[in-house]
Image 1 (tube, helix red, strand yellow):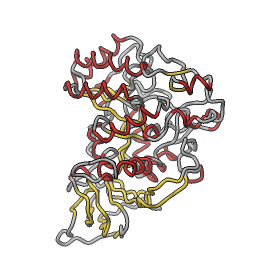
Image 2 (tube, one colour):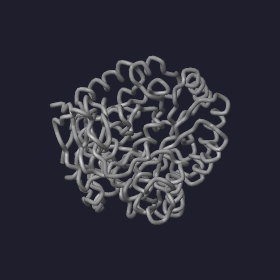
Image 3 (tube, one colour):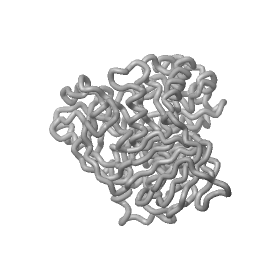
Image 4 (tube, one colour):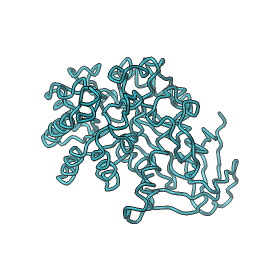
Length: 436
């Protein structure tokens, strides 16, 4: 791939939430970095000029949960297909959970994944290491060695840790070395085997339920362990209003906690299961409208720090099954922008967003705020920052259908929906990695 050394992006509406910039500005890139915003530097000559008239120019998106399915699950997706999906979705930095096969519990596996991703010269891939060997919840991994190999934090993916002593030791270890523990709060027993949110709808459909208290009980445990250890924790894919209240109180108390929600969950509810639509089989499950609305408000007021795609490609053999037997998950990399814009549009005329426009506030949740949560030097167009840039047409409409998705996973509850927001150009570290 040719690497363009100097790029001039002109006439676009540049939005950089981290720096409070929202206006028509030219952007100059050189040697993989942001050179300047506004006027051209003395002696600057562009190797490539991109006319962004009518487009938004934004920092590249930062996705806090994207499963690339390698190693081990190449029949569901490959690194090549999912990195192309990231480029089409404007995602220039992504965090991948450790639940591959084999699990990311040894430095060699992490180095192999990062090397494979680097060779593709597309999105920056930031793996999470496994908290315990094989995600079995028994023996802690060598976190220092995994960090040296490129892990930015440690997770137990979708596997709850049954032994609280193990989680305590993991958090003590993490605190000692300044690592972040990424946890999806779920009790190991309550709701185990459930496939839908507990409530009237699941009962009518005869589906086993996952109650809200599966999430809140786990949160109480996590917060107690945080008080005891001082460890920094990021909570992944919160799904319930009651959980957000607990997180709000924990933040007010001063606990070092952040959280994210999945992009699907800010629009869908359990009613979207319809007549057992397996595309709406998600983990955590879609909950009530009250929970959905609380998540949307929590994202607006900052209780929820970031929005993620929760990209989980699933193949036909595992998705085209009865609802209770289908694998949970949906493709999301290419929908992250559109679902974020849809949320922004819903709140633009209803809420005071302070100094930032509704669009800028929304973009912060998938750029600067997501980067802050992950501890990444990304999500901003500050002078000297890595030149990860996305140009998109906020008004362009597209229909979500299998043929429109680069991801090998073609299943999403938004199939058939008409959404706005289409990426036109994705620039990674100063080179044009994708152009529509």
